[in-house]
Amino acid sequence: MASVWRISAAAAALLAVLVAAPAAAQTISLVELDAVYERGDKIVVSGSVEPRVGEIPVTIQVKRGSNVIAVDQLKVARDGSFATIINTDGNVWEVGEHSVQAAYQQGATARQTFELSSMPVDPAPAAVEGTSRVDLGDGEEGTISYTITGGTVTDMALSREGLGLTVYVSAESAGTISLTASRAYFDARANGCEGSDEEFIVIVDGRQVDHAVERGEAENVISVDFFEDEGRIQIVGTCVIPEFGAAATVALAAAAAAAVAAAGIGARGRTFA
Image 1 (tube, one colour):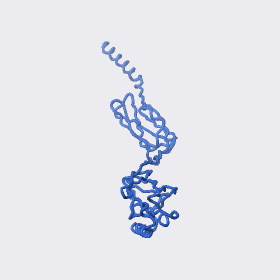
Image 2 (image 1 turned 180 degrees about the vertical axis):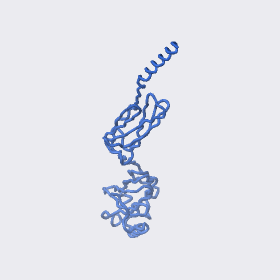
Image 3 (image 1 turned 180 degrees about the horizontal axis):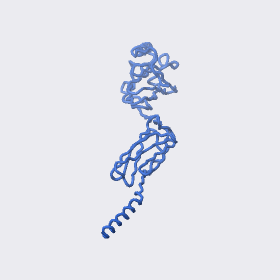
Image 4 (image 1 turned 90 degrees about the vertical axis):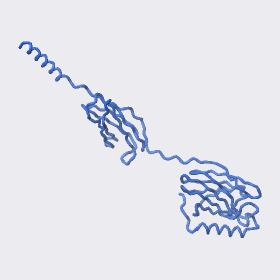
């Protein structure tokens, strides 16, 4: 009996030690975030706990000041790790400092902060410069230079019948093309290209549009806006190459009127602000 008593006393003493001993302290940590994110970014929040306790999840809160922006509960992997993705796209997100807090058992917490900046403005489309050769007749060629944004030039041609220049573009977005053409072979002037300057007519995919013209002594610079997926720009003047000068003034005027009528022009179409 004495021996049994001694064993029971030892067991009781061990049990008392186990009861009195504090449970293992739990810790949680977060992987460091970037200092600044932009609205619309996806933020990866990840970390680990030690030790992992069964299926107990990690609670994540994202705050701006005292306002809770997002809450989530994350499953903890067997190795103690956890991760989630926070999408900063939406009306609840505002510019300013935000905090991410992760909480686990026994009051274990970790905290990170980041700054949310305004959504970046799409950069203006890059301007592309180029030149295109056009047939002047009798085996001669001329060169028209251009600058375009929002697309590319695929072809360009002078038309005696159409009294002007036709430009074909592949428009990936809304943009502008500025064409520099010699007045020696394409112009809009009175009296068979010998008189005062007159207005060009510009037609984009069948609709008349406003445009800008910079007149020079030897060249005209004509700027035209276009929309995405539009492809044909017609610039109608009063004469094309010198051979079509004073000898055909009436015929040219009639051709210009026909070009306008063919485009179905009545009220003006859309224009860019």
